[in-house]
Amino acid sequence: MFTMLPAKYRSALVFFTTFWFYGTFSHGTGFRHSTILDPHGKYHLKWRFDRRTITFEIEVETRGYIGFGLSPNGAMALSDIVIGGVTDGRPYLQDYFADAKRKVQRDVQQNYRLEYGRENNTHTVLAFSRDLLTCDTNDKDITESTVRVIWAYHIEDVGPSGPMYHGVNRGRKSMRLLDPGMKANIPSGADFFNLQNINVPVPYKDTTYWCQIFKIQEVQKKHHIIRIEPLIQRGHENLVHHILLYQCDSNLNESELDASHECYHPNMPDSFLTCETIVFAWAIGGEGFTYPPHVGLSIGTAIDPVYVLMEVHYDNPALQQGVVDSSGLRLFYTPELRQYDAGVIETGVWVSLYHMLPPGMQEYVSEGHCTRECLQESLGKEMPSGVRVFAVLMHAHLAGRAIRTRHFREQEELQPLSHDEEFDFNFQEFQLLKEERLLLPGDNLITECKYTTKGRQNMTWGGLTTRDEMCLSYLLYYPRVNLARCESLPEITGQLKFIGVKEIQVPVTTWPFMIKSPKKYSNLSFTEAMDKYRCKKKVVNEMVLQLPINVRCSKWGQDEWSIQGTIVSPPEVKSEVKPPSMVCRSASEPHSGVALLFTMCLTYSMVQTCLSL
Image (cartoon, rainbow, N blue to C red; front, side):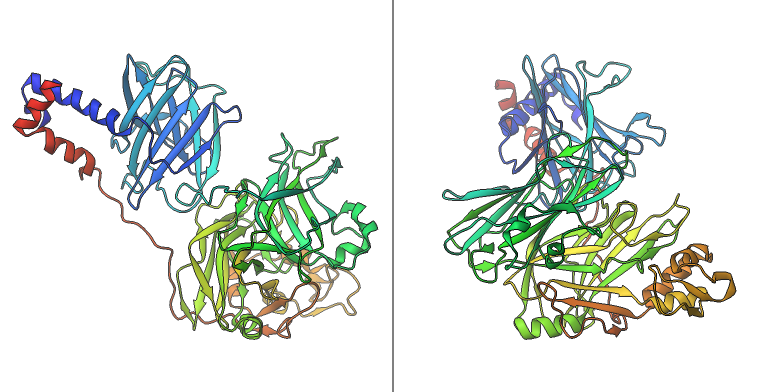
C-alpha cells in the first residue's frame, strides 16, 4: 500500500513518520520505571508498559550500536535480541535472536518497533516497543516472572556484515519488568540507622552464616520503620547472598551486643538461641523494600524488637581467602505513624534433611504447607477477621527453577499470592502484590517449588548451604499477629518405608540416625540409605507429595501453637488455578499506532499537510 503512492508522497510520508515519532516520544515522557544496567553508569534503561505492550528507552554513552536482549538463563544462547543505533542522523533497529551456538541471526519476524532515536557527541538514545507476547518462537515472552536482561554496546554502528563483537561492553541483570516494585519515597522528618557488620573475616569455605546481635535504635515513643535497604560492601555483591533479621529476647544482657560469631555453630553464644522471630528478609539482587503508605514496621512499644540478630549468608564457592566484609542493612524510620503494624510469616518447607531431592531429574516438585489447622488456630484466636498480605519473597537455592505461593479457601484454589516461573537464585526480593490478599482462619497455603537436579550424582538435602535446598515464602502482612512460622515437612516414616527400611537403631544417638535393617542398609545413616536407593524418580516425587505432613505452627520467640508437631494429611484440592496468562498477537496484525498513522497520511488532505511541512 505504501509503495503505491507517488514518489513525492512517499518521501513526505517518511518525513512525517520521522517527525511524528520524534514529536511524540523524543522527550522520554511517561516512563515510570528506570534502572542502570552497568557498574559504570553508562547504560541507562527506562520503560513503561500496559496490558499488551512494553516500551523501552535506552541511553548509552556511545555513538555506536546499542544491544538489548532477553535471555532464558543470562547467557547469549537462545536469547531474544534487538540492536539499533543512529547513523547519519537516522535511527535504525533490527530484531535478532541467538541460536544454540550463540550465533546472532536476523529474525524473519520483526516484532520490535522503532519509536525514535537520536545521538549527540557522546550518547545515543534509542526507544522501541513490542508486544508482551508476540507468537514468535525466537522472541521471549515478557511476563510477571523474572526476566534476565542482557545488554551490550559498541563504539561502531552496525555495518553491512552485521554488528561487530561488543567485547567487554556487556552484562546481565535479572529484573521483573512487569512488577518492578515500589520506588523509595522517604518523607521529610524520617531518619535512619544502620545494622552493619564491621570487618567480618569470611571463612575459607563455600557457605557461612554469620550472626551478630544489635540493639534497635532507641526511641521515646512508637515509630514506624518505612523502608529497609541493603548496605552491601562494594565488590561483595555476589558474596552476600541474603540477610535475615530476627527479634531476640528483650531481656538480653547488653554485653551480648559485641557477640559476633558463626551461626548454627556449637560454640556460638547462647543468646543467639533466643532470636527466633523473623522481622525482615533481604536476598541477593534486591534493591531494598518500601512499605506501603498505610503500613510500617513498629519499634518502640513493649512487644517490639529491642534486640535483633542479623544473620548474613556468605556464598563463597570459589573459596576466596582473606575476605573481610562490612555489609548490613539501613532502616528508615519516622514518628509519623501508619495505620497498621506489619508482620512476617515464614511459610513453605521446614528446613530439614527430611526434605530431599533425587539426582538426575529434569523436574522435581516440593510442596510446603501452611495448613488450615494452623491458620484456623492462630488467626481464629488472634484475628478472626483475617490478615492482609501485601508482599511476598520466594526463596530457594541453586536447583530452584520456579516457585508459586498458592492460596486455597474451602479446598477451592484462588489466584496465586505470587509466582515466578523463571526463578533466579541470584535475584530474590519482596514482590508487592498488585492487590492485597485477605488470609482468613481456615484458609491454607502451599509453597510449590520446582527444581532441576540434572547433572547431580547424589541426593540434594534440605539445608543451609547453597548446594542444599530450601522452599520458602516470606509473607509481609498486617495487622501483626502472634504467628511466626506456618510450615510443613514430609513425614520421614513413609519415605523410609518406601525404600524398604524396616527398623532404625534405637536409642537414636547420632544425627543423621542409623538404619538397623534390612541388611543392605544396616549401619548406614538414613541419608546414606536414601543415596543408595535407586528407582524411577518420578514415582518418588509422586509418593512424597502424597505423604502425611508434620505441621510447624510457631509463635514469636520459642512458643508454639498447640497444632505444632501434629501429623495431618496433605489437603485435598478440588480445583486448581494456574497463574493468569496473556494471549499473544500475531505479527501480521497491525500495531494500532502505526495503523492510525497510515490511515491519517493516506487521505489527500493529510498528504498535502505532510508536503507543506
